[in-house]
Length: 136
Image (cartoon, rainbow, N blue to C red):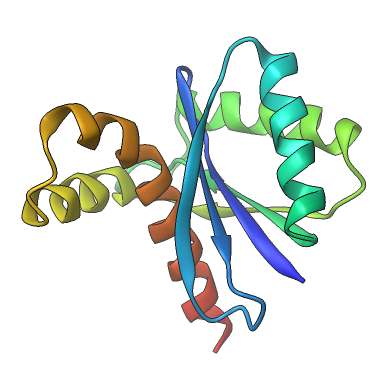
């Protein structure tokens, strides 16, 4: 059983998956956010294919720890997912994951057009790895 992480976005949703031992996160893909029915269909395939036991959603927070407008959208997204799947859902602080993902891809000399496609999945992987590390 694995954990699947989602980096919520209005254009793309980054997806990452843990290994079966829940020690290592890896970027998987991004799914277009619209149409939302298409996103849900692809998510359900991934949940089944990887035998996911927990969905982890990145919760955006301001640097002072408070919640902003983006967190309201994520809470709405979480509510919709709870009605769409029986898999437990948890949110986790995602501060600076996109910054870290961009930095890692830049240091890896990933070309700009490929970076845009990979940054969301990489941010989800950073989020998931942070969560996995907190379990130890």
